[in-house]
Length: 321
Image (tube, rainbow, N blue to C red):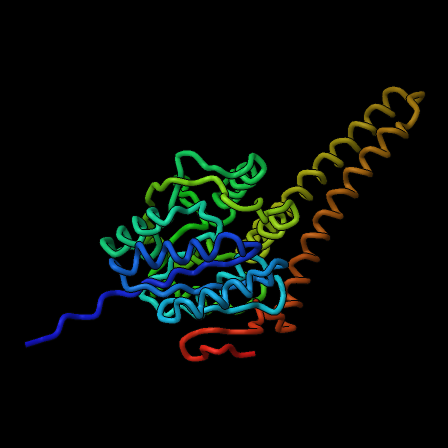
């Protein structure tokens, strides 16, 4: 008589930043609702939050030692790096990435896990009919979507939501990337085309405000631009070629006009404008090359993705520095 195989395990990875008021309730609800149905673990990663998220997460780990492990980073590294830390610690057959602010309802987490287990996808992305983000965040998401179509060859009908689930194969492939500027969706799209999607509901943020600022969105876009595509360099070459042709045509026009009308004065204003445009294009191209070289230097200099200052889990229940 053979024993039944152990059920598949799902790791719920939650990056925590300014989540002290919500993370406790979220973990309680996840365990109450999901543990009777699925074999789960919850991996909390505190991204050096300025509030008391660390103390709250330590308390959660002690309250639920059978389900929760906690890792506190030494400095703020951003959502994608924090998720990479969680994925490196996840032991499940699947890993689902969930926000700490209840914008992803627990009922939808259950729905996504069930969908993934019943299908043979490497990754399942979620999408929303109506997003409850601010207009600024929605605008940034739309821009990010258009850029990803071009830079990453993303399928046009796919929304790159942060709320997604990936299987063990993809977890192992993603965490092979150990350079300092990860972009998780870029890593996923360059690894697999076996992609599913599912519609879910999206709630208004219950606590605080979005942590996505303009600078963080720009940093995210730059990770996409410079880490997973050389298209910006090719565009700078194209821009240089186009403006060289324009300059050549303007030069010919000026010569012809001077031949037919020697009294025409040289266009000082026009000259300043043209030089300014050329100089701007050159500076953009040089800046883009500098960005690539700078990231290459930081990678060669072994800048870490993240540094874990403290960990609390089943193996080190009292904490470890």
